[in-house]
Image 1 (cartoon, rainbow, N blue to C red):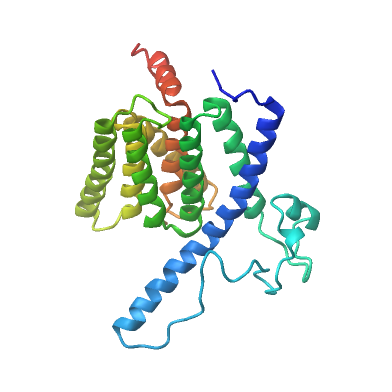
Image 2 (cartoon, rainbow, N blue to C red):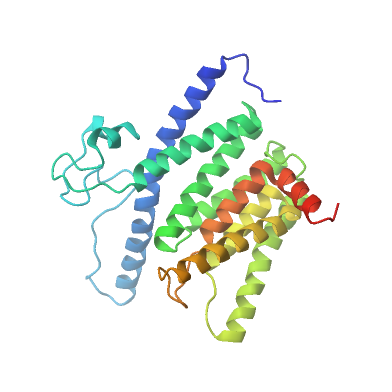
Amino acid sequence: MQAYAGLPLWFVVLSAIVLGLIVGSFLNVVILRLPRMLEARWAAEAAAADASDLADTTPVSLAAPASHCPHCRTPIKAWHNVPLLGYLGLRGRCAACGHRISALYPLVEAAAAAIACLVLYRFGLTPAGGTALLASWLLLALAVIDARTQLLPDVLTLSLLWLGLLASVIGIGPATAVSPADAIIGAAAGYGVLWLVFTAFKCLTGKHGMGHGDFKLLAALGAWLGWQQLPLVLLMASLGGSLIGIALMATGRLDRGTPMPFGPWLAGAGWLALIAGDTIMAAYLTLSGLR
């Protein structure tokens, strides 16, 4: 039973949509700038190591520079920066140069708002709903960053990990059955399983099959879901990634041997398990004849 604290349902839903759009706008900043910030730091460290002054020293942060068109560099006016509505009002083009604006911006904003509504429907206005919403938005940012850059920044994966462990200790996680012991074992198992797969693949082929960020992301999901849900997450992520990979190769959009990020599939499967893991597991056991 969802709890809405006596507030009208329309007000709660509208508030969730507005909050989701605002958070989605901020997630766009994180998605686009955090990889650049990491690359700038790595370049600075490399330049310092070889006493070079060739690294780009242009400051990049989540706060600066101000939002601008990536094509003509014209600052974006405040009313054009309103989540989703600004994009629609501009018809997807820069007001200054007319260059097309990436559809990524409204899609992330709309996804963040939809996530807010779904989490609200599932958990209501409860502490579990709040933690589930925070985890969901972090997973959205990680999925899009990895899809774009094949990076899973530690600042996000480790934050997700520690928040999951803390939620289990306080008892406000969305999966109330996850005890601190289950969360700790889940984090260790999540990291260890993919590390073993990575090591075995490297020994057999001499190649890297995945990045270390995938280990940390599954460890974070183990902290939120407990070790019991990890097989379901891995099954859904592997199945989804395999089917899409096969489809892309069949249509010539992905060459054999070209790496495909696994993080978005882990994040998506983890979110489904977070929201409806018990329901999905019960349906699987029933359809497979195991129950």
